[in-house]
Amino acid sequence: MKEIENTLHVTLPDRYKWLLKEYS
Image 1 (tube, one colour):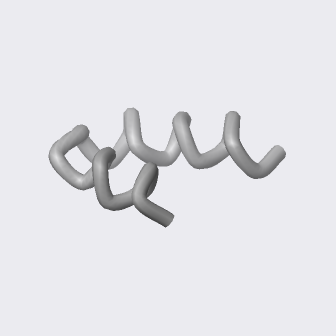
Image 2: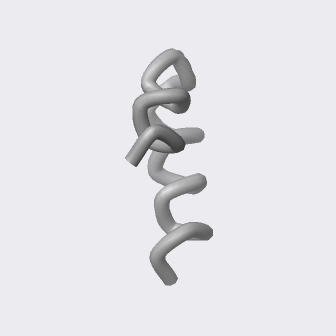
Image 3: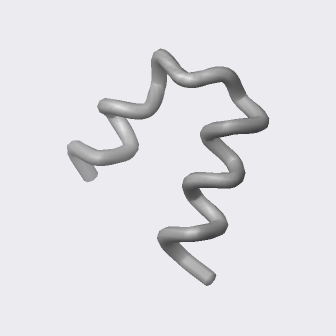
């Protein structure tokens, strides 16, 4: 899950958007 670790610096809303793109 290196991708998720790399997104930790992103603001939470943006991170959740990214997660939705990855897993939806």
